[in-house]
Every structure is written in C-alpha cells, then in structure tokens.
Amino acid sequence: MKQKKSIHPFAYDLEEDDLKRERRRARELRETQWWKRRQSKGICHYCRRPTSPKDITMDHIVPISRGGKSTRGNVVPCCKECNNAKKQLLPMEWEAYLKKFNSDIS
Ligand SMILES: [Zn+2]
Image (tube, rainbow, N blue to C red; front, side, top):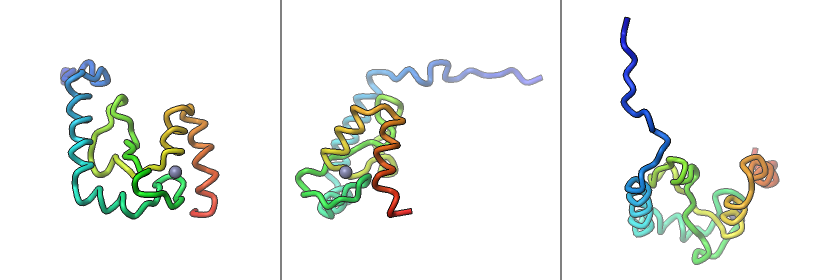
C-alpha cells in the first residue's frame, strides 16, 4: 500500500512572501505591452462597457489572497464599478451581478 504523502499540508495558508511576489508580478504585468494593449481597448472584462483606459484596473479573477496568480490567464481589465462590486459583494451576489451583463452575450 502506498503511503500518502503530504507535501503541502498548508497549501491554502499563503505565506506573506507569496502574496508579495504575486503583487510584484502584477505590477510587472501592468508594464507589459500585452497589458497596455488590453487597457487601451477600454473594455471591461465583466460588464463589457466601454471604459476610459485610465479607469481600467487590473483585476485578478482568482484573488491573490485566495491563491490566485498574477498570470495572463488570471488578470483581466476591469472598470472601477465592477472592481468595487467584486470587492464588496459576496460570491453569490457577484454572480448575480454578472448575469445582468451576460444575458445578451450568451
Ligand atoms: Zn465593468
């Protein structure tokens, strides 16, 4: 019988260093042409509303505090309104908020 290895017994306990590293990577990502192109399009990933590029913020789909990474697959352009809503709403409320916009995208 194989012994079960517990390599990461505290996988969900993020170390302060991990948080710092991902925040630093997010800053670096903001400086890339890739991000600047997305930002200059001025479309919020969530509500799809045209937004002034200066009001576009970088949002982590999975927040860093929940183990999300600062990678291209996990960051999206986001308007201030959605950014605030995402911070303040419970996950269920946030889903309801998104449904308002997704109904015509399908
Ligand atoms: Zn938005």
